[in-house]
Image (cartoon, rainbow, N blue to C red; front, top):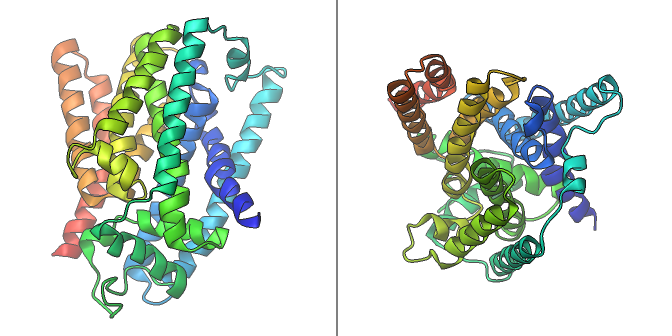
Length: 359
């Protein structure tokens, strides 16, 4: 029971409260609970990266203890700041609800839309059930899951070879991608074995998180047409279920390697990049409302890519640059592309650090 409460606290409550920080400077139409939840995970992972990577590089012994201490404090402070900002906005608006709860409560769904959303719920439930009860094991578990476990048991990050347990020099290729260390952080705070957290708990958190991005994408594409949004979600669920045509597809990673950083990159970070660029383009075109929260999300998304995979940093930079070039070439718009490129500064710092350590 205590473990369940801890999981709810660190995987639901803390990310949502942290997400209230960027939500306070978002446009009104983006302040819904799902967007807040996505923003919270992005900001949480970004703060974890800022704390964990210096610890991996600079601290020789018990560097995971350093991360446990300071990231716990940072996460709780950010969550408290989010609650205070929410309360301030609530009082400032005269007690009006601005998290989208009222809109959700007042939404009217047709019988067809209700049936379609029910079908999607069944498909999502089936995926979660299969991901938890039919856990898939592969060769990568011998590295990523064991790294999480060694951090949990020895308080050291990337100091030993997971295949043998012997001491090793810093593996730069993997050491800067600290997603396994975040899994270890959750495992330690919940008091549960890191392998159980990876194979059982992470799918329950990360699969719905990815579907949140797909749902926000459906809203951006179809607006108020709830029937089309529901059909879009059903199609996404079917793609995920039947996409295991090889071991390399995104769908395979999504359901069988959910706890790995590269799976989070493909299923969450890259789709979110397209969504945020669409949001930012529309908001810049309308030129109204508070947009700082969306730019915070975009920067944190690039930092999250580094948390998940070193290669993802290169991919996100290329994708952002391509989007900026297309906007500049087609729309003759320069302000937005420049801002998009500036948001890749954390990627440049990450790459320079990677090259410096590898050299």
